[in-house]
Image (cartoon, rainbow, N blue to C red; front, side):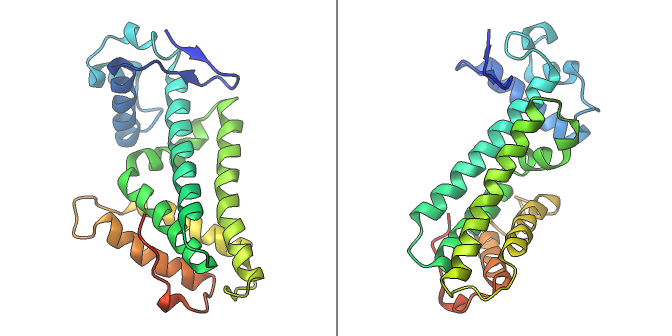
Length: 213
């Protein structure tokens, strides 16, 4: 059985059963949407009975909240680590941040799309929790953008709006990117890194080449 934390997210014990349920739910939510997916669909995809799902999750809503929580915390950790590991210039920090952001959306597009589209399907307390995670993620971008302006590297007069625009660019990747296409995640991230630096009007963007995350 699972336990729940204070905001209602299941704490999953290690094991293949819960993982299979989550993977099946991701595939079905991505293909059919949350409301178009039944617990029977998820059970069938996971190779389990509907009754056995309730040993891991109390409801379909709990599965959705778990997916969104995991996706958002994973990308938040990845982007924070990218900034912390980047060289000292603001441009390099933003470049590394954008590479991590776009790379995540290219590699885990199904989960990222579910997190964007199915926000409308969230119930409380999960909705409030997801909003808080989104706010934390936006703050990472805002901090880098405003620090770059304060340090004289970024010339934009609108750092907050620039940060939001950069975030939106990453979100949009899931709508068109084909993981099996000619453009790999690293190449894609490099292009979007340059777009992010252009958005903040980076003074030396042609010489800023951070390592891809």
